[in-house]
Length: 226
Image (cartoon, rainbow, N blue to C red):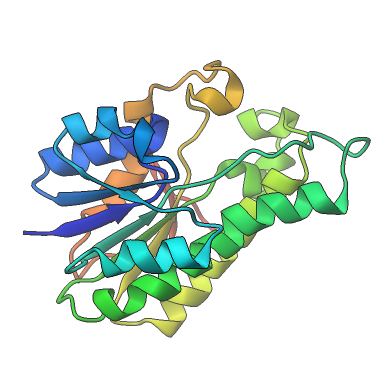
């Protein structure tokens, strides 16, 4: 049995990732800040666990409650309150980075002792094409019209830290996914993809075996060239 922890698993992409991995036979621990919002994921058969990626004590307690771990999906993230230059402040930048980047490091570092005991450890970091300069500068791309600075910068950092984790953990499969323009709370459900389509890459990377790729960036169509 494969044991998986998903952060931000109580709704949207995290909830759908939990559903699909449970269907694939995983035992899923569903991390969320508020256990009172865990009914939907619990109904799928997941084990809700209180986990706030900005709180080290919460992260440590969550990992201590999990007996074993094979797959970590760092899905939790925030859009932030700054959407351009005029409303950008150092504080709004810091808030997004603390959740989207430092939060990934907090959870990953706390999870490493359990993952190192697995025979096939996997880490999937959920980023975004909004963090990819090639998409941000291509007028035909969905990401081109996005002006927000903190969210884009945070997802660029997640892509890079994934590459560096993969180099540092050669026995792991460590990859990063781009959900694409998916209908979620982030965009007022205006995205043109379903949450199932938006989790295709994350789920595929979570199901990798020891011979799978590592250090790569994927969307639902496959590998995105660096």
